Amino acid sequence: MLKLNATKPGEIIERLIAKGVSIGAEGIPLISVLENGQEHVKPAVGDAGEIFVGFSWMHNVMPSVLSKVELVVVPKVAPFTFQLSRQNIISGQISGSNKGTFYEEGTVAAHIFDCEESTGILTFDPSDAEKRIEMVYKYSPSVLEAKANYADADININPAFAFLGSIGCILTGEIFTDQFDASVDWSAKRGEVYLGTGLLTGSGATKLGAHVTHVPTADNPFLGVQFSNH
Image (cartoon, rainbow, N blue to C red):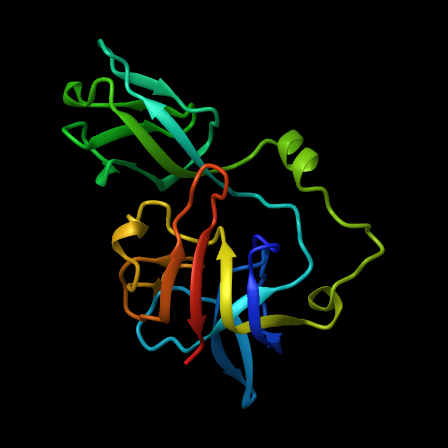
């Protein structure tokens, strides 16, 4: 999904979608593949040699995954747990920050927390007691939340990708996307933007000509990236 009132596309082109591929959201990094000698696009998978085309640009659809930034205050006493406001956290898609110190998921230790994905319960090390940590994570919204906040457009509005098999690609500009790796410390990766599996990530085989212009915050949980496709 894109934050449309912040995204500033510079150039957009229409491309055919690769056979058997589904592109379910805006803001997904797309790569080039040739089918019968003609360029088609599909979501990046993070392999070496991928040719980045741009980011998907289409009619909004109801999202199955959302990003969120939430302030966590670690309890003063044991058991040093905190209940996030959302459940069904996406595996490996959570991290935190406190005054420049990065927190990652793993076996509990200083600056390392455990996340029970189904319940959204975090467990911290005693050394982090009373710390205020800004957590960035992705989760699967309930049907009720998705329908209430991200209603589908009228069913009679059929975007091009639904019946022509093509999709808009943003080739240059600045985008605000939720298709990013939430386990990455983006404040420390400003000029290191790589292709992951359908996401932007902080390391990998294919580095983009891009830099981070906005790290996710509570009031704007999108990653801002200025880029060109070559």
